[in-house]
Image (cartoon, rainbow over all chains, first blue to last red):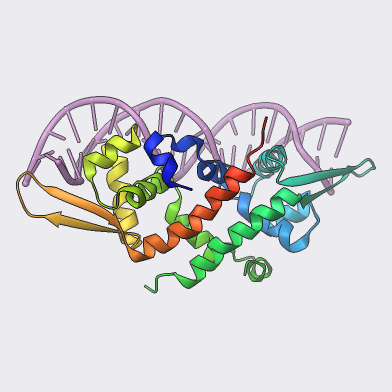
Length: 112
Length: 112
DNA sequence: CCGTATCCGCAACGATACTG
DNA sequence: CAGTATCGTTGCGGATACGG
């Protein structure tokens, strides 16, 4: 629970801050959503979905997501190279939680 | 649901992106947590809980949270001034969702 | 006490060129 | 195709000083 953390004034060590650190950044969640929708996606394919992301940023984000065990990278040793990205089980479990944020946002959007 | 958004390649308009925009930034969620824990908090009090936040950043964040209707600002016209911040009902409903991110983070933290 | 005004550093992101 | 290397840009947040 959240309350415990405030007393310790130790927010950086909360599960919450940890979860957010995994998905922070401009593109990470869009990447995760693409992987959830299409299950298995290649590098350039992903790049097209994200429209404006640069090679460098996509590459960095994928590495971080992989290091955090949210996605799985599968490399096929062939020419030209082929690499596929997919959600891990851990990644899928996170998506179920994130989806609730999505629902909240839909139901609580301010009509301006 | 999330899936609908990907096809439209319209992530910016998702409820999810919207929710995140409300709580993005380094301190916003810590602020929300403090308000959840203490219910009613004053400016300098909040500043002490957050340890390192600057006046400017705290002020900006509070204004944005208020504009997004997540918190309520109450001003007492007296000298010296007294201002109290508290979660709105909308803010409280968001916290119940955020708490699940917290739980996920606790249960899924990688042991390195 | 509760902020605003100003300046500035830094990390994230983008653009482009290039490689196995 | 799937990246790496390099350089440039930008926006968030910090530090400090000041005001009602």
